[in-house]
Image (cartoon, rainbow, N blue to C red; front, top):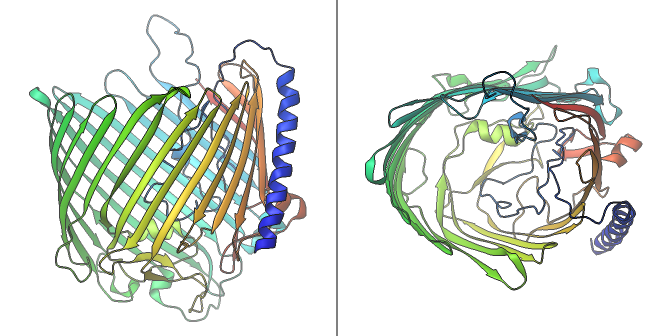
Length: 555
């Protein structure tokens, strides 16, 4: 392991030197005038979205509590595509344009197809949004398409906002579908499809004197099914698929002044397999969960403090009859002689508890099946974030998060080490864990170039699909008018079971006009050239070694 780390450090140093040399030559040719760096393009291909970069990236949200695993390979959420309006077309006709269309379409190797389209009205009376997204690839790592080396995701979403007097209504609904080919690993199933239909509404009323009342409901139907092979051996109904209906009505009442906010809220959640007893290892299942919270927060221009506490009761919350989650936290924002930009420091801690859903788990972890409705996950936790700007060229950031299982309500995660079933799908276990995760990053702005180095470390227990250490390096460059530019990124995963080959990728773009931009992107270059695979987990591989050409538009 130590020798591998030394090799990676050497490769990192070489990569940084090459990147700095390339961009230094490019920057010398640019004007010395002050440059305002516009946004980069966004391209989705392969297992890593390459997102637009701000002038100085913000790492304050890099440690979200829900980030238990890496993004699934090749299954990006099409709704994650940034919707920042790059340039609003000039008004045509007598009226001001308030309905816009934006999106991207692209294709490439290996059989990559990307389509993402959004029609929306963001301002004015009764805004709305309609969205369609699709991302698919097949035959990666030079495998035959007919051998089910494929994955795809399709997303449809719509929402409408209506304001009547003091009340704003929001109605929404969507459909998500994910398909993973089982790569001839399973002798029972050809592929696995997960689909979810969801919809609901919220009603938000604002009264005089800072009083607000919010209520709503979100209901969903989740279904997983697998395509059966000819003459397949015996299997269980839970492996083949299941259907789950969920609903969670909620209500919140709050009062706010300029500096103080006080609120109470309640939520009820029900999950049921709709009487389909054959599809669950433990027969027909329905779980109920209720929670009630009160919160208070105060802030001024420098400090903020907040507290939230409540009770949780339910049919699957563990051995306790009641759980009492709470959070206490605060933040401070101040300036130093080092920079005109403010230092930001935040910290919070307490006990968090939640009931993960089957759809969340099976979507997060590919090639898995859950045999029953999961119970509660509870953690004692503490986390902090720090952003330290230095002059106008450097930002240092650091985040840390500690979590320890509370009340024996462990973390649900798949057992990728062994399937235990003929179908070669992976089941789940609830495991007590103690986790301490840190992320350290440095972002440098040098004229038209931005460079970032980050290091993620798991110091105690390592969650599934994560590594003891991950190091990332990226650099981007574009001209002063944002007509053309490019980006290069490298990721090293350092662990005993990690692939020793770093993931290297990049992109370049050319803006044809204010509305149309062309981009080319390549992901996992080494795997693309060699045709070798990158393991996802267990016996399955992930999408790797892809290249795509994309057109992005906004009208």
